Image (cartoon, rainbow over all chains, first blue to last red; front, side, top):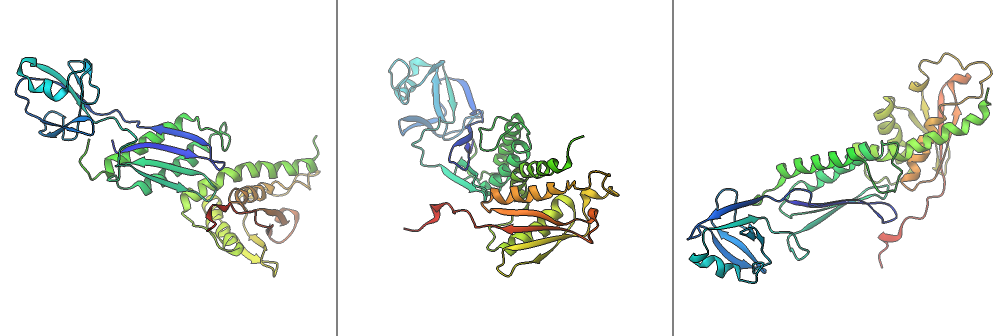
Length: 187
Length: 148
């Protein structure tokens, strides 16, 4: 999904709220027989789908597991190279799980946006640069903060935010923003 | 029966608590940017904030030639719309101090120290209700903007 994390920082610089990669990654597990109708290539130490699309598996998805065993980069759990393994017809039929690759801090595709209010509270959103509408999302988060965190009588200012309504509404707002915003290839 | 004189500071305190939180709600909904002068701030309090939360627009006057004392004149105070007169024995009660506390709390959250008091009160026989705002020396701005 295009929005990776949301952080809220108070006046003193302490983190009072964080929400990371909240959305479940779309994953698809399918059984394949030889020959594989998807073209795979090695990229950045991961095996990605370069061409071919079926049943929820898209270009850019990574091989996450083979026959139920998690894949470690370009090698399977027992040390065999994934591309070699999948090139050998003797190993078929094989069940492969595809999904969006897990995010690492090496991703060059992240954009951080910050909204600094006049009172010193800072809202930080980490998102895909292709995601549009981050400005309005930040304002919406500010409104949600003022509605559900501030109006909660049990919440003290500058303290970590532990308000359920704030969580719920924030996730709702993120979902709406993602549906409305991304213009790049979707997940 | 408790002494009304002691109650007065409590309204201000309640208002202060409200004000510190209300200001974020106000900023989130009204999209006002940074103000550049005290008179601009007072104008915004009167025309945008009061209108948003109480539905009235007080008029602003400037009392002091050094431009840091202002008054908000309310000809209609929604908080006392249904009050005919203060109960006997409680004539020093000034529960609109709530409003003063709110304004002070809100200003403090945006790093502006101010003294806010009630100058005139219609309930006590004055012709209008007047809230006085005196801006004190601005607190040290955080230095993150300094160019070096």
